[in-house]
Amino acid sequence: MVDRVPVWMMRQAGRYMPEYQALRRTASFWDVCSRPGLAARATLDAARFLDTDAAIIFSDITLPAWAMGQKLDFSPGPVLSPAVRTLADVAQLNEVESAKQMHFVMDAIRMTRRELAPEVSLIGFVGAPLTLAAYMIEGTPSRNWVELKRLAYAEPEVLAALIERTTQVVADHAAAQIQAGCDAVQLFDSVAGELAAEELAEFAFASAAKVVKAVAPLGAPIIYFARNIGAHLEQAAKVGADVLGLDWTVSIAQARRRLGDELGLMGNLDPAVLLTNAEEIDRRVRAILDEAQGHKSFIFNLGHGVLPATPPLHARQVVTSVRQWCEQKKP
Image (tube, rainbow, N blue to C red; front, side):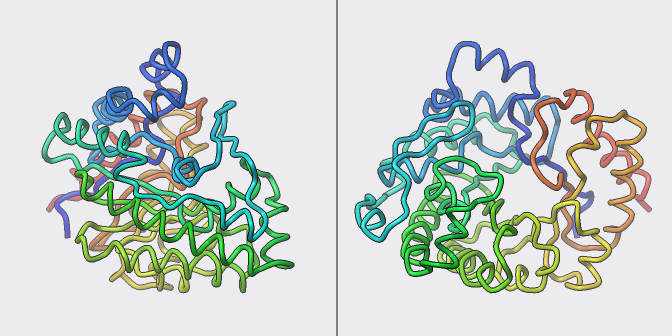
C-alpha cells in the first residue's frame, strides 16, 4: 500500500504542450525520437509541468520495426515500408540488438534519469508483439486492420512467424530500456482488441506473456495495457504483468470484482474528459478513485493517451484532483 495513489498519463509528453510544439518547430518527430537530448527534454518538460509521479520516455513503438529493416517515416503518423505480409518478408528482417541499433533511446533514458528527481519513476515503453506486427503488416495505423486480420484468419502461419520475431525484439528492447535506467516498462497493445477471441488469445496475450516472462528476471515492474479487451480481462490478467492497464470501457469496480485486488490496476479516465472543464475533470477523477479506494496497488492514469487538443492546464488538473483526493482521505 502506497501513501498516496501514484498518477501519470500516457502520452503526457506530446502535441498538446506548448513546449513540445516549440520543440517541433525546430525538429522533426524523428529528430525528437533519435536525438537523446531532444527526447529527454520532451520527457522532462511534461513530467515537470504536470508534476506527475512518473515520466515516460519520449519514443515511438515503431522504432523496432525500423531496426528490423523497414523504412520508417512520420507524416504525421508512422509509415512503414515495405509491408511485411509473406514468410519471405519475415525471413528478410534484420536481427536486432536494441542497445546498439536503438542506442539513442537508451542514451535518452540515461540523460532523463540523471535529470529526473529521484522520487519520480521513469517508465520505458514498447509496442506489444501483436501491435508491432500489425503496424509492420499494414504499413500505417489502420481503421480496420484489414491486412492483419486477413493474415490472422487466412494465413496464420505468416502472422505467427512475424510475431515470433517481434516477440524477440520487443523483449530485447524492453530489457535494454530497463538496463539503461527505466524503473518500469509498459507493454502497449493498442491493436489487441481488434481480433476475435481465439486470435486475441493466440497472437496477442500469448506473445505478451512471453515478453513478460523474458523481462521479469530484471526485477522492474511491467505494465500491460491493451485496448478494447474488457470481455477478456481474466485472460489479460494471466499475461503475468505486475499491473494491468484499463481503458475507460471497463470500470475499476468491475475489474476489481472480476480480478480481485492482488493484481495491480492502472487507469482509466477517458482522455476526452480533459476537453471539458476543471469541475467535470475533478468529478470524474474522484469517481474513479472512489472505486479504487482500498486497492493496494492502483495507479491513476488515462484510459489511453492525452489527446492533442487537450488544454495543458486540464491535464494538470488531473494530477491536482488525484492529490487533493488523497489528502482528503488521509486518516
